[in-house]
Image 1 (cartoon, one colour):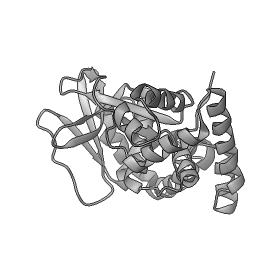
Image 2: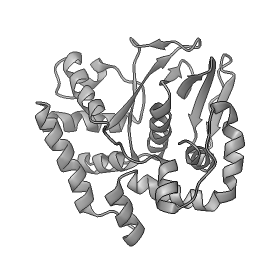
Image 3: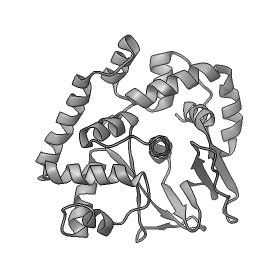
Image 4: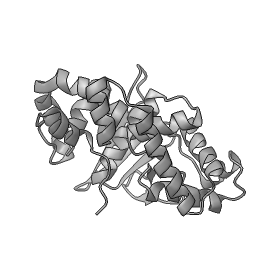
Length: 255
């Protein structure tokens, strides 16, 4: 069994020592968010730390003890990834181009062709093979397009998120790319949802960052880091807008 990085709920239980209320179903989401306000400040402070360490135990220990993550821990993650890329017969230089382009895209929907055109890769098929390696290594989370009926449309563009904030920030440093808070936060929500649900996105004139179907109900999530808020699509009954505070309270209950 392969164990991925800790999610935020497990981080709070195992590292911080609190047990937030747990979301058993998305229909109870706001009830649990309200219940978790009992630990509001602790959860907010812990979420800030989690965005630095992700769910990686060594990074968590260092941040808890010293208030920062060492370059040695970042290097260890990178060395492991580079070794895995080479074992998968992928060029490190080309993989770096792909990762850099994904960071620049800031979770915008992408095609295999757009990745190929914006790197030195010569075909969409090869571009997909590089992204598939990142997915197999649990480095990224891929969301497919979901239509208003809740059906996944695989031929549409995909949104590609980094699966953990420590991975996101470490790879950004490796590629010399800026970390954008909107992409980072959206990625954390998307990766948490994707651990439990078949998670996609929707986009037309507006966009729904994450779309989940549970018990025949469609839930759309918008992760908001600024003042702008997109209008809710008419077809979407459950439009959940998460700001910095409610994101942490929601993820605290997402076991």
